[in-house]
Amino acid sequence: MNIKTLTVSEVTNYIKRMLDNDFILSNLSVKGEISNLKYHSSGHIYFSLKDNNGKINCVMFKSSAMLLKFALEEGMEVIIKGRASIYPATGSFQLYCEEIRKEGIGDLFVKFEKLKEKLSKEGYFDEAHKKILPKYPERVGIVTSSTGAAIRDIINVATRRSNLVDLVLYPAKVQGIDAYKEIIEGIKYFNKKNSVDIIIVGRGGGSIEELWNFNEEELAKAIYNSKIPIISAVGHEIDFTICDFVADVRAATPSQGAEIAVPLSSDIRDKISDISNRIDKKIDSKLQSCKIELSGAERLLKLNSPIAKISNSYLELDKLQERLRFVIKAKLKKEKSAIENLNNLLFAHNPINVISKGYAIIEDNDNNLITSKEMLKESKEIKIILKDGETKGNFTTLE
Image (tube, rainbow, N blue to C red; front, side, top):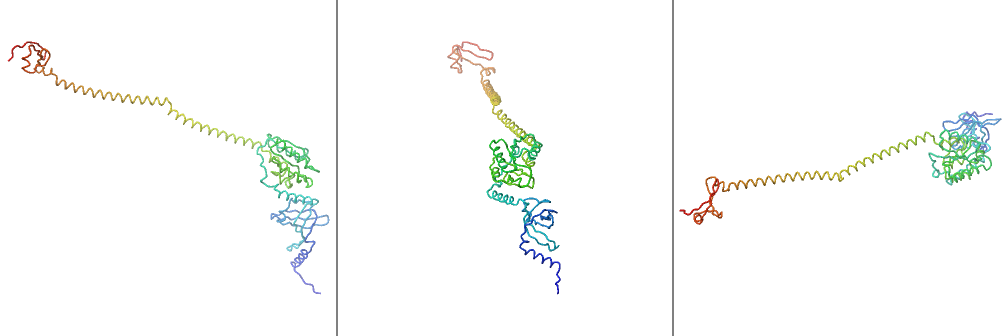
Protein backbone atom coordinates (compact mmCIF):
# COMPACT_ATOMS: atom_id res chain seq x y z
CA MET A 1 0.00 0.00 0.00
CA ASN A 2 1.44 3.34 -1.05
CA ILE A 3 1.11 6.19 1.51
CA LYS A 4 1.38 9.73 0.19
CA THR A 5 4.13 11.76 1.80
CA LEU A 6 2.99 15.25 2.88
CA THR A 7 4.92 18.33 3.81
CA VAL A 8 4.61 19.90 7.24
CA SER A 9 2.63 22.85 5.90
CA GLU A 10 0.28 20.51 4.06
CA VAL A 11 -0.41 18.65 7.30
CA THR A 12 -0.99 21.81 9.33
CA ASN A 13 -3.17 23.34 6.65
CA TYR A 14 -5.21 20.12 6.43
CA ILE A 15 -5.75 20.07 10.18
CA LYS A 16 -6.63 23.78 10.12
CA ARG A 17 -9.27 23.20 7.43
CA MET A 18 -10.79 20.36 9.44
CA LEU A 19 -10.94 22.43 12.60
CA ASP A 20 -12.28 25.51 10.82
CA ASN A 21 -15.06 23.46 9.23
CA ASP A 22 -16.07 21.78 12.48
CA PHE A 23 -19.35 23.25 13.72
CA ILE A 24 -18.56 22.87 17.42
CA LEU A 25 -14.95 24.04 17.26
CA SER A 26 -15.84 27.09 15.18
CA ASN A 27 -18.34 28.33 17.79
CA LEU A 28 -16.97 27.47 21.23
CA SER A 29 -17.80 28.65 24.74
CA VAL A 30 -15.02 27.56 27.09
CA LYS A 31 -14.70 28.05 30.84
CA GLY A 32 -11.36 28.17 32.65
CA GLU A 33 -8.75 30.10 34.63
CA ILE A 34 -6.41 32.67 33.05
CA SER A 35 -2.65 32.12 33.34
CA ASN A 36 0.50 33.31 31.54
CA LEU A 37 -1.28 36.60 30.77
CA LYS A 38 0.53 39.02 28.47
CA TYR A 39 -0.72 42.35 27.03
CA HIS A 40 1.33 42.87 23.83
CA SER A 41 2.37 46.31 22.60
CA SER A 42 0.44 45.61 19.40
CA GLY A 43 -2.79 45.55 21.39
CA HIS A 44 -3.23 41.77 21.18
CA ILE A 45 -3.67 39.74 24.40
CA TYR A 46 -1.96 36.36 24.83
CA PHE A 47 -2.74 33.95 27.71
CA SER A 48 -3.53 30.35 28.62
CA LEU A 49 -6.87 28.98 29.74
CA LYS A 50 -6.57 26.07 32.16
CA ASP A 51 -8.45 23.83 34.55
CA ASN A 52 -7.29 21.02 36.82
CA ASN A 53 -6.61 18.63 33.95
CA GLY A 54 -5.63 20.70 30.91
CA LYS A 55 -4.47 23.96 29.30
CA ILE A 56 -5.15 25.71 25.98
CA ASN A 57 -3.20 28.65 24.51
CA CYS A 58 -5.40 31.63 23.67
CA VAL A 59 -5.09 34.86 21.71
CA MET A 60 -7.43 37.84 21.58
CA PHE A 61 -6.70 40.24 18.74
CA LYS A 62 -6.69 44.01 19.24
CA SER A 63 -10.06 44.56 17.49
CA SER A 64 -11.78 42.32 20.06
CA ALA A 65 -9.59 43.34 23.01
CA MET A 66 -10.66 46.98 22.61
CA LEU A 67 -14.25 45.95 23.38
CA LEU A 68 -13.40 44.41 26.77
CA LYS A 69 -15.17 46.10 29.69
CA PHE A 70 -12.62 44.97 32.30
CA ALA A 71 -8.93 44.15 32.60
CA LEU A 72 -7.87 40.50 32.58
CA GLU A 73 -5.92 39.28 35.59
CA GLU A 74 -3.95 36.15 36.48
CA GLY A 75 -6.17 33.49 38.05
CA MET A 76 -9.39 35.12 36.89
CA GLU A 77 -12.21 32.68 36.17
CA VAL A 78 -13.70 33.50 32.77
CA ILE A 79 -15.90 32.16 30.01
CA ILE A 80 -14.52 32.62 26.50
CA LYS A 81 -16.48 32.71 23.28
CA GLY A 82 -14.51 32.02 20.11
CA ARG A 83 -13.17 29.32 17.81
CA ALA A 84 -10.48 26.64 17.98
CA SER A 85 -7.83 26.34 15.27
CA ILE A 86 -4.10 25.99 14.78
CA TYR A 87 -1.44 28.49 13.94
CA PRO A 88 0.13 27.01 10.77
CA ALA A 89 3.52 28.63 11.29
CA THR A 90 4.12 26.71 14.52
CA GLY A 91 1.44 24.03 14.30
CA SER A 92 0.18 25.02 17.75
CA PHE A 93 -3.42 24.53 18.73
CA GLN A 94 -5.08 27.61 20.26
CA LEU A 95 -8.32 29.40 20.91
CA TYR A 96 -9.07 32.64 19.02
CA CYS A 97 -11.15 34.66 21.51
CA GLU A 98 -13.88 37.04 20.40
CA GLU A 99 -15.61 37.75 23.74
CA ILE A 100 -14.64 37.23 27.38
CA ARG A 101 -16.84 37.54 30.44
CA LYS A 102 -16.21 36.82 34.07
CA GLU A 103 -17.46 33.49 35.34
CA GLY A 104 -20.79 33.54 37.18
CA ILE A 105 -21.80 37.11 36.21
CA GLY A 106 -22.73 36.72 32.63
CA ASP A 107 -26.35 37.66 33.25
CA LEU A 108 -25.35 40.77 35.20
CA PHE A 109 -23.06 41.91 32.41
CA VAL A 110 -25.86 41.48 29.90
CA LYS A 111 -28.19 43.47 32.16
CA PHE A 112 -25.50 46.13 32.65
CA GLU A 113 -24.93 46.54 28.90
CA LYS A 114 -28.65 46.71 28.14
CA LEU A 115 -29.25 49.42 30.75
CA LYS A 116 -26.18 51.31 29.63
CA GLU A 117 -27.38 51.27 26.02
CA LYS A 118 -30.90 52.33 27.02
CA LEU A 119 -29.79 55.28 29.18
CA SER A 120 -27.28 56.37 26.58
CA LYS A 121 -29.98 56.56 23.91
CA GLU A 122 -32.18 58.55 26.30
CA GLY A 123 -29.41 61.14 26.75
CA TYR A 124 -28.48 60.42 30.38
CA PHE A 125 -24.77 60.34 29.51
CA ASP A 126 -24.71 63.44 27.27
CA GLU A 127 -21.91 65.88 28.02
CA ALA A 128 -24.29 68.79 27.50
CA HIS A 129 -26.12 67.75 30.68
CA LYS A 130 -22.97 67.56 32.82
CA LYS A 131 -22.79 70.25 35.49
CA ILE A 132 -19.52 72.07 36.15
CA LEU A 133 -18.00 71.51 39.59
CA PRO A 134 -17.38 74.67 41.64
CA LYS A 135 -13.64 75.34 41.94
CA TYR A 136 -13.78 76.43 45.56
CA PRO A 137 -16.60 74.62 47.39
CA GLU A 138 -17.35 75.43 51.02
CA ARG A 139 -19.20 72.19 51.86
CA VAL A 140 -19.03 68.72 50.29
CA GLY A 141 -21.79 66.17 50.84
CA ILE A 142 -20.85 62.48 50.94
CA VAL A 143 -23.28 59.60 50.43
CA THR A 144 -21.64 56.33 51.48
CA SER A 145 -21.35 53.88 54.36
CA SER A 146 -20.28 55.42 57.66
CA THR A 147 -18.15 52.35 58.47
CA GLY A 148 -16.52 51.55 55.12
CA ALA A 149 -13.02 52.28 53.88
CA ALA A 150 -14.40 54.79 51.37
CA ILE A 151 -15.39 57.40 53.97
CA ARG A 152 -12.04 57.08 55.74
CA ASP A 153 -10.18 57.57 52.46
CA ILE A 154 -12.31 60.59 51.55
CA ILE A 155 -11.84 62.23 54.97
CA ASN A 156 -8.08 61.58 55.00
CA VAL A 157 -7.52 62.99 51.52
CA ALA A 158 -9.90 65.95 51.95
CA THR A 159 -8.48 67.08 55.32
CA ARG A 160 -4.95 66.70 54.02
CA ARG A 161 -5.72 68.92 51.06
CA SER A 162 -7.61 71.64 52.94
CA ASN A 163 -9.10 72.49 56.31
CA LEU A 164 -11.34 75.14 54.76
CA VAL A 165 -13.93 72.73 53.35
CA ASP A 166 -16.64 71.16 55.52
CA LEU A 167 -17.51 67.49 54.94
CA VAL A 168 -21.10 66.34 55.55
CA LEU A 169 -21.83 62.60 55.60
CA TYR A 170 -25.20 61.08 54.77
CA PRO A 171 -24.75 57.45 55.97
CA ALA A 172 -26.23 54.94 53.54
CA LYS A 173 -25.92 51.27 52.80
CA VAL A 174 -23.85 50.69 49.66
CA GLN A 175 -24.23 46.92 49.41
CA GLY A 176 -27.09 44.49 49.72
CA ILE A 177 -30.70 44.34 48.64
CA ASP A 178 -32.22 47.79 47.90
CA ALA A 179 -29.15 49.62 49.21
CA TYR A 180 -29.43 51.98 46.22
CA LYS A 181 -32.66 53.37 47.72
CA GLU A 182 -30.74 54.79 50.69
CA ILE A 183 -28.23 56.33 48.28
CA ILE A 184 -31.12 57.95 46.41
CA GLU A 185 -32.47 59.32 49.73
CA GLY A 186 -29.06 60.83 50.44
CA ILE A 187 -28.98 62.62 47.08
CA LYS A 188 -32.52 63.93 47.62
CA TYR A 189 -31.65 65.07 51.15
CA PHE A 190 -28.76 67.24 50.00
CA ASN A 191 -30.80 68.66 47.12
CA LYS A 192 -33.68 69.53 49.45
CA LYS A 193 -31.41 71.19 52.03
CA ASN A 194 -29.27 72.81 49.32
CA SER A 195 -26.55 73.04 51.94
CA VAL A 196 -23.60 71.58 49.98
CA ASP A 197 -21.80 72.57 46.79
CA ILE A 198 -20.81 69.07 45.60
CA ILE A 199 -22.01 65.54 46.34
CA ILE A 200 -19.68 62.51 46.32
CA VAL A 201 -21.47 59.19 45.83
CA GLY A 202 -19.27 56.14 46.25
CA ARG A 203 -17.85 53.10 47.96
CA GLY A 204 -14.75 50.92 47.83
CA GLY A 205 -14.04 48.21 45.31
CA GLY A 206 -15.73 44.84 45.02
CA SER A 207 -17.21 42.31 42.66
CA ILE A 208 -19.89 43.23 40.19
CA GLU A 209 -22.49 41.78 42.55
CA GLU A 210 -21.23 43.99 45.39
CA LEU A 211 -21.23 47.08 43.17
CA TRP A 212 -24.56 46.31 41.52
CA ASN A 213 -26.57 48.87 43.52
CA PHE A 214 -24.70 51.54 41.54
CA ASN A 215 -26.06 50.02 38.31
CA GLU A 216 -29.72 50.52 39.22
CA GLU A 217 -31.77 52.66 36.84
CA GLU A 218 -33.55 54.54 39.66
CA LEU A 219 -30.22 55.67 41.11
CA ALA A 220 -29.00 56.75 37.69
CA LYS A 221 -32.09 58.94 37.26
CA ALA A 222 -31.68 60.43 40.75
CA ILE A 223 -28.10 61.42 39.86
CA TYR A 224 -29.25 62.83 36.52
CA ASN A 225 -31.99 64.94 38.17
CA SER A 226 -29.77 66.30 40.95
CA LYS A 227 -29.38 70.10 40.89
CA ILE A 228 -26.09 69.75 42.76
CA PRO A 229 -23.06 68.43 40.82
CA ILE A 230 -22.26 64.78 41.65
CA ILE A 231 -18.94 62.93 41.60
CA SER A 232 -19.23 59.16 41.19
CA ALA A 233 -16.38 57.51 43.14
CA VAL A 234 -17.23 53.83 43.03
CA GLY A 235 -14.78 50.93 43.33
CA HIS A 236 -11.29 50.79 41.90
CA GLU A 237 -9.91 52.28 38.69
CA ILE A 238 -10.92 49.26 36.57
CA ASP A 239 -14.50 49.22 37.93
CA PHE A 240 -17.19 50.98 35.91
CA THR A 241 -20.82 51.41 36.92
CA ILE A 242 -23.85 53.15 35.42
CA CYS A 243 -23.37 55.88 38.03
CA ASP A 244 -19.96 56.66 36.54
CA PHE A 245 -21.50 57.37 33.14
CA VAL A 246 -24.42 59.51 34.33
CA ALA A 247 -22.56 61.48 37.03
CA ASP A 248 -21.11 64.91 36.25
CA VAL A 249 -17.59 63.65 36.99
CA ARG A 250 -16.26 60.11 37.39
CA ALA A 251 -13.49 59.43 39.92
CA ALA A 252 -11.53 56.19 39.69
CA THR A 253 -11.58 55.76 43.50
CA PRO A 254 -13.13 57.45 46.55
CA SER A 255 -9.74 59.02 47.29
CA GLN A 256 -9.63 60.56 43.82
CA GLY A 257 -13.18 61.78 44.35
CA ALA A 258 -11.96 63.77 47.37
CA GLU A 259 -9.02 65.10 45.35
CA ILE A 260 -11.38 66.32 42.63
CA ALA A 261 -13.88 67.89 45.03
CA VAL A 262 -11.53 69.54 47.53
CA PRO A 263 -8.94 72.05 46.25
CA LEU A 264 -5.53 72.34 47.89
CA SER A 265 -5.24 75.06 50.52
CA SER A 266 -2.12 76.32 48.75
CA ASP A 267 -4.11 76.68 45.52
CA ILE A 268 -6.78 78.65 47.39
CA ARG A 269 -4.16 80.91 48.97
CA ASP A 270 -2.48 81.41 45.59
CA LYS A 271 -5.84 82.26 44.03
CA ILE A 272 -6.65 84.73 46.81
CA SER A 273 -3.20 86.28 46.46
CA ASP A 274 -3.65 86.55 42.70
CA ILE A 275 -7.08 88.17 43.10
CA SER A 276 -5.70 90.52 45.76
CA ASN A 277 -2.82 91.55 43.48
CA ARG A 278 -5.19 92.17 40.60
CA ILE A 279 -7.48 94.25 42.84
CA ASP A 280 -4.48 96.28 44.06
CA LYS A 281 -3.39 96.89 40.47
CA LYS A 282 -6.88 97.96 39.47
CA ILE A 283 -7.12 100.28 42.48
CA ASP A 284 -3.69 101.78 41.70
CA SER A 285 -4.67 102.19 38.06
CA LYS A 286 -7.98 103.83 39.06
CA LEU A 287 -6.25 106.15 41.53
CA GLN A 288 -3.67 107.13 38.92
CA SER A 289 -6.47 107.79 36.43
CA CYS A 290 -8.33 109.88 39.03
CA LYS A 291 -5.15 111.85 39.82
CA ILE A 292 -4.64 112.63 36.14
CA GLU A 293 -8.30 113.64 35.81
CA LEU A 294 -8.09 115.78 38.97
CA SER A 295 -4.90 117.44 37.77
CA GLY A 296 -6.58 118.29 34.48
CA ALA A 297 -9.61 119.65 36.31
CA GLU A 298 -7.35 121.79 38.52
CA ARG A 299 -5.60 123.23 35.47
CA LEU A 300 -8.94 123.96 33.85
CA LEU A 301 -10.24 125.55 37.08
CA LYS A 302 -7.17 127.75 37.36
CA LEU A 303 -7.61 128.91 33.79
CA ASN A 304 -11.27 129.78 34.37
CA SER A 305 -11.16 130.91 38.02
CA PRO A 306 -12.24 134.49 39.03
CA ILE A 307 -8.78 135.09 40.49
CA ALA A 308 -7.20 134.29 37.14
CA LYS A 309 -9.69 136.59 35.41
CA ILE A 310 -9.00 139.40 37.92
CA SER A 311 -5.26 138.92 37.49
CA ASN A 312 -5.68 139.06 33.75
CA SER A 313 -7.85 142.19 34.20
CA TYR A 314 -5.09 143.83 36.23
CA LEU A 315 -2.67 143.11 33.45
CA GLU A 316 -5.13 144.53 30.94
CA LEU A 317 -5.64 147.63 33.12
CA ASP A 318 -1.89 148.13 33.38
CA LYS A 319 -1.64 147.93 29.62
CA LEU A 320 -4.51 150.39 29.18
CA GLN A 321 -3.00 152.75 31.78
CA GLU A 322 0.37 152.62 30.08
CA ARG A 323 -1.29 153.27 26.75
CA LEU A 324 -3.28 156.18 28.25
CA ARG A 325 -0.10 157.70 29.66
CA PHE A 326 1.54 157.38 26.29
CA VAL A 327 -1.45 159.03 24.54
CA ILE A 328 -1.59 161.85 27.12
CA LYS A 329 2.14 162.49 26.85
CA ALA A 330 1.89 162.52 23.10
CA LYS A 331 -1.11 164.88 23.26
CA LEU A 332 0.61 167.21 25.75
CA LYS A 333 3.75 167.23 23.66
CA LYS A 334 1.73 168.05 20.58
CA GLU A 335 -0.24 170.82 22.32
CA LYS A 336 2.93 172.21 23.91
CA SER A 337 4.53 172.33 20.52
CA ALA A 338 1.45 174.12 19.12
CA ILE A 339 1.54 176.64 22.00
CA GLU A 340 5.21 177.28 21.42
CA ASN A 341 4.50 177.87 17.77
CA LEU A 342 1.67 180.29 18.62
CA ASN A 343 3.85 182.01 21.20
CA ASN A 344 6.60 182.42 18.68
CA LEU A 345 4.10 183.77 16.19
CA LEU A 346 2.62 186.10 18.82
CA PHE A 347 6.05 187.20 19.88
CA ALA A 348 6.89 187.89 16.28
CA HIS A 349 3.81 190.07 15.93
CA ASN A 350 3.94 191.76 19.35
CA PRO A 351 3.96 195.59 18.99
CA ILE A 352 6.24 195.85 22.00
CA ASN A 353 8.89 194.09 20.06
CA VAL A 354 8.47 196.70 17.27
CA ILE A 355 8.67 199.60 19.78
CA SER A 356 11.94 198.22 21.12
CA LYS A 357 13.42 198.90 17.75
CA GLY A 358 12.71 202.71 18.06
CA TYR A 359 9.08 202.83 17.07
CA ALA A 360 6.18 204.28 19.09
CA ILE A 361 2.43 203.72 19.32
CA ILE A 362 0.05 206.70 19.45
CA GLU A 363 -3.42 206.36 20.89
CA ASP A 364 -6.14 208.88 21.68
CA ASN A 365 -7.72 209.39 25.00
CA ASP A 366 -10.06 206.47 24.33
CA ASN A 367 -7.16 204.10 23.56
CA ASN A 368 -7.92 204.19 19.89
CA LEU A 369 -4.87 203.68 17.75
CA ILE A 370 -3.98 206.82 15.72
CA THR A 371 -2.68 205.74 12.40
CA SER A 372 -2.97 209.02 10.30
CA LYS A 373 -2.40 212.74 10.49
CA GLU A 374 -6.10 213.44 10.18
CA MET A 375 -6.82 211.36 13.22
CA LEU A 376 -4.06 213.15 15.08
CA LYS A 377 -5.56 216.53 14.25
CA GLU A 378 -8.83 215.55 15.63
CA SER A 379 -7.37 214.33 18.92
CA LYS A 380 -6.89 216.95 21.57
CA GLU A 381 -4.99 214.65 23.88
CA ILE A 382 -2.84 211.77 22.86
CA LYS A 383 -0.92 208.94 24.52
CA ILE A 384 2.46 207.88 23.19
CA ILE A 385 3.70 204.43 24.03
CA LEU A 386 7.49 203.96 23.88
CA LYS A 387 9.89 201.14 24.69
CA ASP A 388 10.41 202.16 28.25
CA GLY A 389 6.87 203.39 29.00
CA GLU A 390 4.16 205.78 27.89
CA THR A 391 3.51 209.52 28.09
CA LYS A 392 0.53 211.82 27.57
CA GLY A 393 0.34 215.22 26.05
CA ASN A 394 -1.64 217.87 24.16
CA PHE A 395 -0.87 218.63 20.58
CA THR A 396 -2.42 221.84 19.38
CA THR A 397 -0.43 222.50 16.32
CA LEU A 398 0.78 220.07 13.82
CA GLU A 399 1.99 220.76 10.33
